[in-house]
Every structure is written in C-alpha cells, then in structure tokens.
Length: 370
Ligand SMILES: *Cc1c(COP(=O)(O)O)cnc(C)c1O
Image (tube, rainbow, N blue to C red; front, side):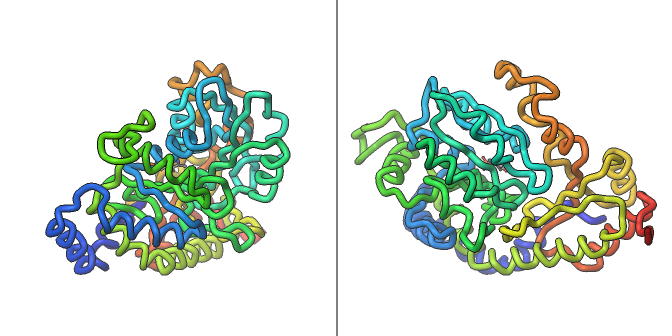
C-alpha cells in the first residue's frame, strides 16, 4: 500500500527529540502558551521573513483574527477565491463581512489577478489570496492593486510554509499572513495550531489580545476576545519540527521533479511551478478528465489519492446564501472536476513514486511517444 500521507514515518524519524520536547512541557506545566510557544513564535516569524508572530489554536483562527485586526467587520467585503479549503471563506463570514469571489488562473491555480479590480466596490476592505497547494499567488499584482485601492492584504498561507515569490518568503509580503499547523500541513503539529505573522506591532498586539479573551492583563478585557491560544505541547513540537522543514521541503520538491519526469509523456497535466515561485508542494495534484476512473483504479492497486477540492466553495450548500451559482467561476469549476492529488510527503520513497507513475501510465494508456 502506498499511503497518501504518512505521519508515522515522520514521527519515527525524530521520535527522541519530540518525546523530549513533550516531556519538557509536562515537567514545566506550561500547558497553554508559555515559553515554548513564545520561542516558536519568534522562530517561525523569522523563518517566514516577518518581524512578529502570534500563535493560535488553528489556521482558521489565524485567518479570523487577522481579518479582525485589519478592521474587517459587518458590511465589509473581502475578495478571495472559491477554489480553496472552506476555512478561507468561513473566516471571512465569522467577522460578519461578505466574501466576494474572483476566479483562479488556470496555470497557477491561485487568484486571477486580472479579475480583482472588477470585484472591488466601496465596501471592499481586504484581499485574501490563497497560496494553494504551496504555490504563491502573483503577489506583485495583488499588492499593487491593494495599494492603489487602499486595501489590506491577508495571505492565506496555510498550505505554503517556506514557499517563495521572487525570492521573498510567503508571510513577508501581505499586511498579515496566516499559517496552519494542522497535522497534515507541511509543518504540522500533533494536534491543532496556527499563526499570524506580520511586521505591524499594533496589529500583532491586537491579535495577541484577541486570542486570549481580549485581555491586556489578567481580567482586564479591552477587546471582545476569544479562547484561541496555542497549547504549550504544540509549540514545543513545532519548534523541533521547524528545524527539519527546509530538508522536508527539498524532499517534496525532489519528489515533484521525479513525478514530473515520469509523467512527462502521459496524457495527464502535471502541476506548473510558476517562474516566480518556489512551490512547496503541500499537494501534488495532476489534472485529467478521467479523474474518477483513475482514482478508482489507483485505489484498487493500493495507491491512495485525494481530491483537493471536489466542490468549489461558491457551489457548497452552506454558502448558497452568497447567491452564486454554477457557471460563475468556470475555471474553479473545471479544475475541481479534474484534480487528483497523488501521494506526497517527505518520507515518500523514489521506488514508490515510480510505482505510482507506472500504474498511472498503464491506466491512462500514457507514455505514448507522440
Ligand atoms: C488548512 C487550511 C486552512 C485552515 O487551517 P486549520 O488549521 O485547519 O484551521 C485555511 N486555509 C487553507 C487554504 C487551508 O488549507
């Protein structure tokens, strides 16, 4: 069997360090926030090229609080994409603002920057590009449009730890950037976790208060806050894992190159790494019109795959009140019908990738020479 992800293999590789880190927190009894979380905030912000980091209990909370810190609230609009994980849209709705969708670019699968200005109204407060699958959105365009219209830019970098745009790290470009440390993400906790990084001390201070009941000091509630704090154990684990992230990212990139090479002659469309990008391949998704058959046959051969995501958010029942319908975002809809995510994690072996690629070529009748 070739698994889609294998969290156990990664744990076994670093078991003694992780176990020691967890024991340290148990001994210290700093179960919520504490010095491990504070150290992780500094280290991860530095890794992402930002001055400040505020750790929270999930990527969704990071998005929610980043929006609040940017002043987004009821009556406002936030521009984002419908082809993303539902959390991007949900976080906008939590603030009382309205998500306004813009279609994706068929090559990068990130926001089609040529369509952003057409979606801006008097109520637009922010743009939230999603660095989908680990590929950065075209940030120069996004930032330039935002500057011209005086909008905040909040990066949804939940899938893109360490990704780069023209040599700049994801997290260093927007006003605020949000990461998830859900276990399956490129940097994953052993539970839930997230972080907002920013260069803006005022906004960082607001988020620090909002994650902890809006307190400036104990029992002095300046803002209407939340319980969105990170666990001490997660902070300690993430500090250990951050030291391996570059190595793991390079392994993912090597796997992507191997897939690309082995599937070059197939009739599958392999993912593009944009010329501006360092793609970190959180997801390695090929495209094919025969997606269902391919997935079924791979599964029969013991090869697990995933679909990220089968239904764009504008067609989800929960968000039907936004008033969108089929045909509104044709590129998102088409891509949602065609993507198939292949096994991808640092510990994946070259032989496994060969097996997957060979089986895919057999199924699709690929490896044709013309
Ligand atoms: C995972 C993810 C989130 C949410 O992160 P959680 O930690 O699961 O709350 C948000 N946006 C995108 C694009 C994601 O992939």
